[in-house]
Image (tube, rainbow over all chains, first blue to last red; front, side, top):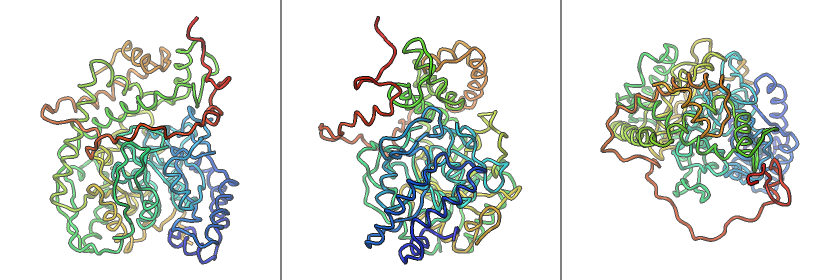
Length: 486
Length: 95
């Protein structure tokens, strides 16, 4: 049953083969057994989750079930959840019981889904390995000596280890796609502006975007149907017609043009990743797609541009944490200024402080044009590269990450090496495009490999179709750590 | 590019983050590494390009100037580090 799709869970629930309370209880039991080893959850509130499940059972009994009613979903601890500890992986918010729900949480509540817990993450979503969390690193369930990726590493681990049927994530530079790839699950970052950022703790507001993480593309489509939508409380939310992301899943891929950026297939990709991606592309050709070479000439600028824009926006967003209205306050200080300095020095971890310092520098007097404005201009060049490429293809593919999951501790002492591991995913955030990752095999040490699928603006339904058609003829997405396939 | 120790301390001061001498030294080395990574983008000629703020080039939405928030002072103050008589307490600023 653990491997069931969200649709199958829903069918079981509606047919009363199982109640939401029982289903939620099963997953809670699994989390109780596995979480001490994996550290995927920061908070589990069994009683709260079960009460929500019983409420869902009542909704179903009254015949008002929606597709996700009664299904347990894990929430990344970046989404404010009323009455729940919402830490964002930081000591700064280690005492923050949110007084309100994020828009995403409201939407899952309205859909009757059950919150099964808050997942671990890199502190303030700044990291690619989950090692910057104040609550300790998450383990990769395929190999506990490896990182799960980040920053949505807890969500990726929880789904991969089948501690939750699906989870939410957020993606500023690859934080949904890279952990999905490293943990062997599926994840999609929608077009910027599709999912409301209201109540999602801000890191870099012009790049942050929430999205679903699950076993399959079909599950992602169901989740996105709940998550996407206009919200007046998010000033960059897009006002668009409501879409059904399930609508195109069954379309054949005959004639699909897959663009392969020559800049993505380079020597930096390890052989095991390249092999798995090539095999996936061969499968797509068998499904009727053809591949064409495209070029994204400004690819190499993505990482430098990102490490100006993201820290600049972060330094501004994180200035709200001052120990006055909520969050951590240092126990001792001599005056107001000292209280700010000590609260922030003690409340933030090393990576967060590093990024605040970079951001403060690039925004400081005399440097603003040379760094921030220059980076925003280059951002347009990067977006134009994609626009040009999409004239020759319908969708772009490549590896999500240049290597399989690295070992815990392997890159944590060298920030620059860590940053470079996100080279493929970052450009997509800079352009505001949708991107996803699906599992396409295993590489060195039997660690998962992800295929990166990049679509044009608002083509999520097509991307999910492309992923679903592959998953119809392969079973990577059904594989789970330990080999158990019940 | 490398930052001086004084520059690191100046930025830390602007960011209101206390750093010890030892921390400033570590930060100096790491930040210099990151700035080397960033330098590459400064060389590109962008004189004819408009900067991007929203990738859909969206304009700021406007709304009528009416109150939309409800008063939740007690709820919000219940999670504050220190409050008294409905006020957030901080160390004395004016003698």
